[in-house]
Length: 352
Image (tube, rainbow, N blue to C red; front, side, top):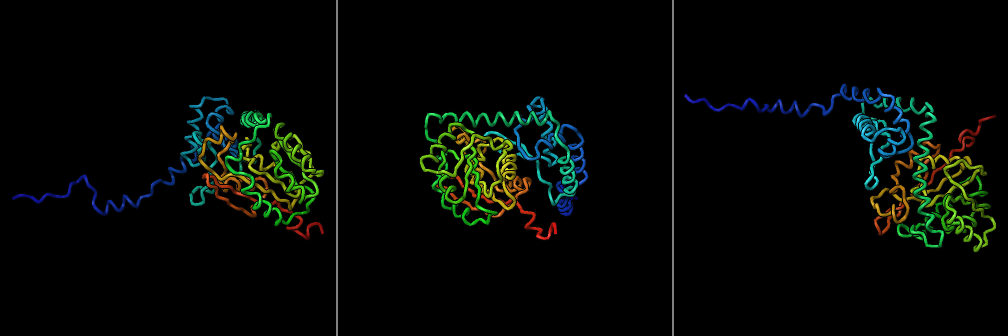
């Protein structure tokens, strides 16, 4: 008597398949073990501290910690597997940054407490100096680019977005702002000074901060030719603390992507504002057009609004308004407004 062929024993039954598909893709205990392994190393904790408000490439991190690239890559892989760092591609380069605690994770609260504890600790002076060296190397690339324009060659920014494309929306936003006063406006990176006449007609005084001597000369020439008596053009690095009167409004147009440390720049901008004052930022949205680095001297390929908001919050600013302008060449502009809270207005009875 022939036996009917049975179900192969190597294949799971339907109920077994259902059990397999219902299993979680990761084991929470294994996830915790991976998290603890990643955070159980002093160097990896220092990497998280360095990445607090900045993103670095693997070569930059290897330089900061004075170690081989292969060793740094190993530590970054361990942190990535634990969900503690994420990557952002900038053309052919990959930058690492801290991951935000996942709200749906079993260990999200532990992640958040870890970062808060690390941020409460000051960085060692040696690490601070090493980070400053990397920032200086980035800044030198930008300085070398703008130094080419000492002979009067027009800047290449118009290849991305001509100022005329966003001038009117920008002015409409500034005119709508509720400011402490209209005594002082600061423009960071005025370039050739094209926006200075507009600011000079809206504020009692205008201070322009420019880090490029060649561009500063052009801004001064623009102010002189326009007869602007209430404009001061200063050679200054906006990333360095400035002994200036606090501004009612600070404007930065298409400048942040040239700065070596955007998050640090946002903090400096906030420091220059009066309580209740506004930061108005015109920037590129994130993009993948790598040619702008060589042609326009860009250090960063635009920014996501999430990053700008996070840096603003860390700098004590509040997001208030945003506007997006699509361009035919594939770029998109964003105009963001952030306000420095006025504690006295929030607590009118304080001090009584």
